[in-house]
Amino acid sequence: MTTPVRTAPQVISITPVAHQALQEIITERNLEGYALRIYASGGGCCGAQFGMALDNSKQEQDVSFDVDGLQVIVDTLSMEYLHDASIDFVNHPQHGPGFLVNQAHESNGEETCACGGSCACSN
Image 1 (cartoon, rainbow, N blue to C red):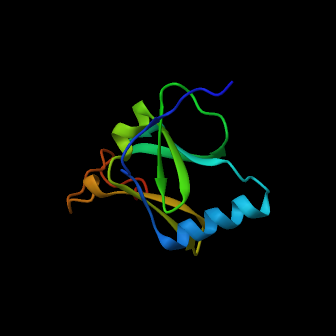
Image 2: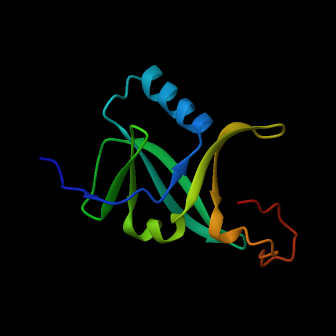
Image 3: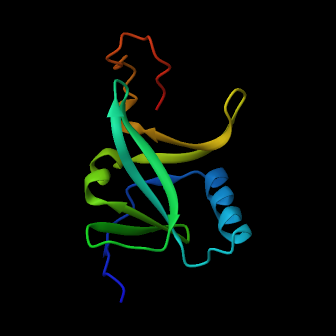
């Protein structure tokens, strides 16, 4: 039995590079029918931290939307932190390739890190 999932307008964008990387992962791992789950996984001095997974299990508190053919699932609590966020795929020189969540509402040009800059905060 499948739990009904509420649909919502698209509130998260995915860059073309990230979209292609996700499609390749889904194809390589034979995960057709899976959605990208994005969630807030706690905070720190730099704000909420995020996680992502490919998931085919939907819960009652989830909302879903389509981003250029890719199904995205976010629980209602995490949605508060992800509104207007963008998912990108980067190849960081020190950390290697990976996905990055950029929060548009936090990049107002002001330094918002509560630790006074002692950590490597980036959105």
